[in-house]
Length: 198
Image 1 (cartoon, rainbow, N blue to C red):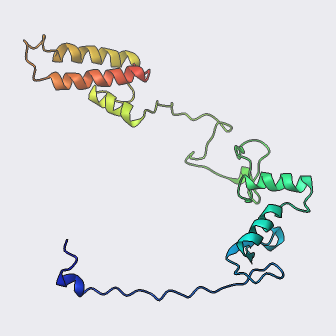
Image 2: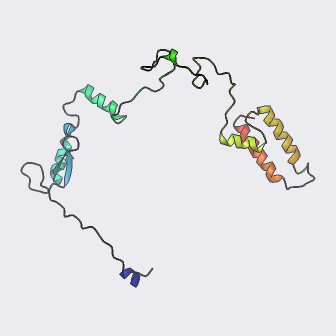
Image 3: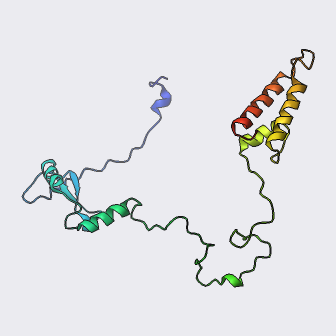
């Protein structure tokens, strides 16, 4: 790139004027130096700062104590609340459907659920048997073997043996065109076996 090109001579960059630094005096009594360094005013004046010179900010920081005039119980409570950023929290695992839990203004006997969408174990077991749920990799491995998610370990093993016998080069007179498919099936079966599904 040629920086002396006439193309670059036409480019003008407008820069915002830089504000002149305002010189603030040090807030320490009797000090006329510039107050370049900020120091917090304290717990009761959050967001407010003193402006000190370097020597006085060092002196102030050495003696600064945020918890000054707080009892031990107040300090412990502050530290517990600091863990969650001083925001309110609630207990996890509240069983809203369990005994003794009731929403305000809602009568549990007046609620009708004709579709059975909100049925839970406390009110009765679901009539539909639970089917196993597999992850994406397990589903892909089952699909490679030509099976669905209802297949059990014996079915998976039998299907694997059947496909290996059919696709192995020895069974096809030395034809190696189906080797890639055989590798996929072996890989899928090994994955299912490692996931304890086969």
